[in-house]
Structures are given as C-alpha cells and as structure tokens.
Length: 468
Image (tube, rainbow, N blue to C red; front, side, top):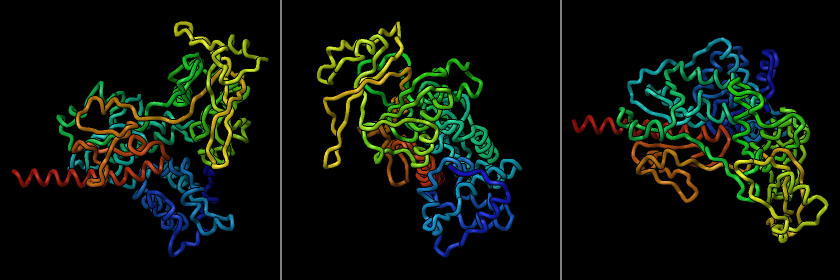
C-alpha cells in the first residue's frame, strides 16, 4: 500500500529518480503512464505540470496511487528495486493527485460534446475510464449507475481503510468538470434498455457492468442466517459508514467469530474489515496452500499483521446451525458418513443462525493437484463470508437482442473496432468481459475500447454524411 508523503518527502523521493533512457517503470505500468516525466515535473516543483502529465493517461490517479499493485508493476521494473531502493512511484502519484484535488487543478477543458453522444453503463474503473477518455475527445458522455452514487466497486467494494470514499468522489468530480454527466439510481434493463438509449440518440453504448453476481457454495446449510457473500457484507459496511444504514445492519456483531472462505484480495478486504468491526477472531480458509494464494502479497501480510488467522487445505462441505454443531461436537465424522449427521435444510422462515462449518481436508498430490480426502474438521463460528469469485449478471444482456456471451456468461467482444460486442454500436470491457481483475488492468483494456468507440462513431457519422 502506498505511503502518504509530505511535500518535502515527495520532492526528496522525486530527486532520487535516475530518469533512465529506457524507463522500465513505464513499461511495467499497464496504462503506460509517463512516469519519468511526471516525476521530473514534481522534482522541479511544477505540480500542475505533473498532474497534467498523469492525466494524459489516467482518469483515476488518486485511486491508482492507492490500490494498484505497484510492487508487481511500475515499482517492480524500477532499476533501483534490485538494490531495494526502488522509487515509491505509487506514493508520488497519490501525492500529486491529492494536491490537485486539494487546490482544484483542472488539467483538461470541458467537452463540447460535438464529436458524438455516448452512453456508459456502470461507473466502476472501466466505465469511468471510458467516460473520461471520450470526454477528453469532445464526446458528450452520460454514465448510468444503478447505485445511489457513482463509483461502483471503488465506492461499495473496496473498504474505506484501503480507499477513502472522499478520494473516489474527488476523482468523479474531476470527470464532471470535463463534462461527464452521471445519472444514478437507474438500472439498465428494468428502468431503461439499450434499445431505449439508441432511440434517445446515443451513437454508441459502453457496458462496464463488472461481475455483479457473487459466486456461492451449493452445500447444505447455505440458507442459514449470517452466511453471506463478501460483496454484500462489504457493501453493507460501506452503507453504514456513509450513514445510509443503521450500524446494526452491518450484520457482524462485536465479539463474533468470523470465517472467510477464499484467499483473493476480496477475501483479505472482508477479513480485515471484520477485524475493524470488532470480531473476536477472524479465520480465512483456503482449499490450497499459501503458495497459491491469489491476494497481493502486501494484502496477505497486512491481514496477518492485523491478527487474521489462516488455515489451508480445507474446503467447506456443509454449514451447520448451532444445534447441529452440538450434535457433531465430540463425534468422529467422515465426509462419506456426513448424511448420518442429519444435516437439515434451514427453514427459510426461521433463518436459523450459522453455528459452524464442516470442512473437508484437502491433500496436495505430487503432480501439484489438490484432491479431497475422507477426513474433515469442525469449526465453530458466528458468521461466514464467502469470497470465492464473481460472475456477470444477465440483466442487460437478457433485455437486449444481439449481444452474445460465452458459456460462463462473459460478454464476447471483437478486435475491430476494439471492444465491440456482437451487436453493432454496443461495446464492453472490464470484468464483464475478462473476469475479475485489478483496477488498473480494467483501465488498460477500457482505454483501448474508448479508442474503438471513437473510431466507430467517427466512421458511422462519415457514412451518414456520405449517404445524405
């Protein structure tokens, strides 16, 4: 995670940059940010120029400076990293963007909207990237967002301790400054369809809806109270933080024992949030070993420092209510005999609270594969948070003709014009196309799609002019 710097620290850090002839840091940045030049401008004390340089490639520098895995990208490619003295690029980017927000710097003029009219569905990293890039090219851009305020996963998915929501709001205000319009509380599908948008005069439509549906486990006890998805849990906590829900609605009670299933970045976010919400004990369960953990190393280490426990080579095979836990305690149970425990399907009217988990032991074979065994363990808990991935929702595709998806529900796009779906004029990128990824990787693909949209609208207008 990037370190917040004072102006003196930022200037001293910028002065350490070697300004390599072939900058590896820029090569390591997925969106090819002009890192040496913005560091040079900062070193010279010209923060306005530094922000202008960053804004050429990024619409979300204050966010990227905080949540990008710099240790795997730009900073990993810095020549000084080999001697463990790498430049703190993320911290410098964050410093410049925060300075710009604080003093109201506006590096780009407002769009005149003359080049075309584009609708953007979703205001996560992909949607905001496309909106910003097209507004800078004088497109009139309208973003449709189903939530009460824009930001998508940046607002409701990444916890406050990792990404301040005031930072997200500041970045979105910069997009408003260049002419991007936001319409919130609008669900595309139920409230307005893609056909409606074309009928309203939009030249092209971008779908950046992400993977809105969390994956769950289809095992006994899945209906029990307090068996939650990480998306739902994190969103409830953020709504409480925003003052939109009562604190009791954040589900987790102080002193609860929490089990988190999964070991990606979202699992770390959920576990660390539970610690901050006063959980007595937080344990992460993962079916593989620590070597296969998909979370960023920095996030894994942060969770460990904060007291999160990790148990590997274990996979849930049933969630138990408190009565079932009492029946099982002290009893030797094997997975093959699990039916004899009389695992009941929870009464949906009663919604009995979860009391524990029956976990199956996993073994790693010599070829590296992971296979279940016939041994299991019991774990007592008051809350289970599932962080095992997401899949796309079909709300838009099901209300629109001509948009094809693959067998997993991900939208199919083409190379030319880049990012267009199987329906002409409808484009897509981000998680809904490529699966869950980091903020900056969603931005990388979306910048290419923004170019494809511009080419499409220009060609469409030219053909209309030629035909008239």
